[in-house]
Length: 487
Image (cartoon, rainbow, N blue to C red; front, side, top):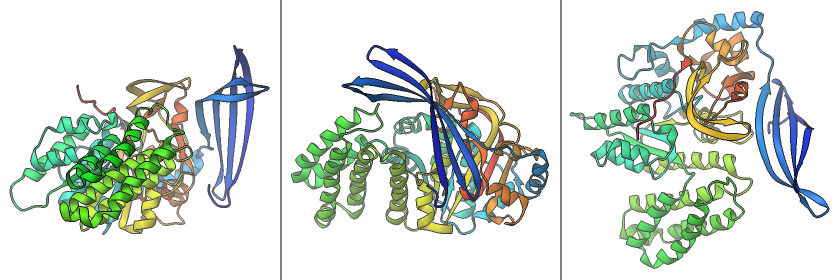
C-alpha cells in the first residue's frame, strides 16, 4: 500500500438465498483510496457461499462477479491544453508492420539512450498490433542499437527449444512455440517473430547471434526434468533424494485448478533442498560437467522452487513479480553479462509502480535504474483475443469486441489528437506542463490480461497514472485480435 494513503471499505449484503445447508450471499463492496493524487473508488460485487458449521457458518467459496474503478473523467475544458501538448510532443509512427524503414522510430531510439534493458509491455494479451509493434521494435533494437537477447513472459527452460530452433534449425518453430503452452503466444505474430530471428541468425556475413529466452516460472515439470537429467548424468548419488522431492512437486502440479494449495509450503521446502544441493556441490558438479551446465541445471531447480512457492497461500502474484525479476537478473548477470536485452511482458509486469503487489518492473527499476527503459502500450477500441468471464465464471477463448473507452477516460484523451499510432516519451516532458501533470494522475485505461469481462465491459478499464508506471507509451487507436495458429 502507498505510504500516507488512507484506505476505507464498505460491504453491503444485497441478497441471501438458502440452498440446503448452504447460504448464497450476494455482496456489493466499495473500497476508497485517498492520497495526494486524489481519490480512487473501486466497486465490486461477489457471490459468497457459506456452509453451516456447528452453531455458526463457514465461508465455502467466494466468486468475484465484477469490479469497476470509479474515477472522474477529464472534462472537455481541461482536455484542451492536454491534447494540444500531446499533439506537439507525440511522435507519429507510420506502421506496426515489421520491416521497412526505421525513420519514424528516431524518437524511440533517442529516448532509450544507452539503456541496457528495454522492457516492452502490452495492454492486452490478445492484440495483433501490440505483437507486431514489438516485433518491429526488436528489429530496430537489433539492427540499430546492438541488442541481442529477447526474453519473453514465458516459462523457463521451455524457451530453450525456441532458442535451439533459431540458432540451429532443430525442430520447428511451431512445435517450439507450442512447447511454451501459453495460448497467448501461440499466434501468427509471435511465430513471425521467431522465424525472423531464425532468418537473422542464418544470414551470411559477420553479425551477432540472437538469443530467445524467458523468465516466467509458473510451472515446474520441465524444469524438474532438466534438473534431474543433470543429476542423473553428473551426480547420480543425489538422484533418489531429488526424485522424492520432485514426486511431491508433480503431485502439486496436478492440482493446478486451485491457485493456492495448503501443501505448497512443504513441497516448496523440499524443492529448496534440491537448490541447496546444487549449491553445496557446485565445485564437484562443475568439475564433472561445465560451469554453464551447472548454472542452467541449478536455475532449473530454482524455477521448481519458485513455481511451488507461488502456490503458497498469501504468495501468488506478488511473489511471481519478485521471482520473474530475479530470473531476469540471472539472465543479465550470469548468462548474458555483456549483452543488451529486450523484455516482452504485459503492462502489469513491466510497470515500475502502481500496483499494491510489487511488480517485476518495480524490482528491476530498483536494480537497474535508468539502465532499463520501460514502454507501456494503450488502445482505445477494437477487438481482441481473450478468455471470457461472465457472471463470475470463465467462458471460451474467443475474439471479443471492445467498445470505445468512455469520453474523458485516459484512452479517450490519448485518442483525441487523431493520431492512430504514436510514441510518447513521457520522461522528457516539462514537469509543469498540463500533459505531464495529467499523466501523473490516475485515469481509466484498458489493461486486459488473459480475460475479458463480457457482461461488464467497463470493468476492463483500470486506473493508471502512466508516467508513474512507464517511461514511454505507445498508443494504438484500434486493436485487432491476434491470429491464433491453426492446430
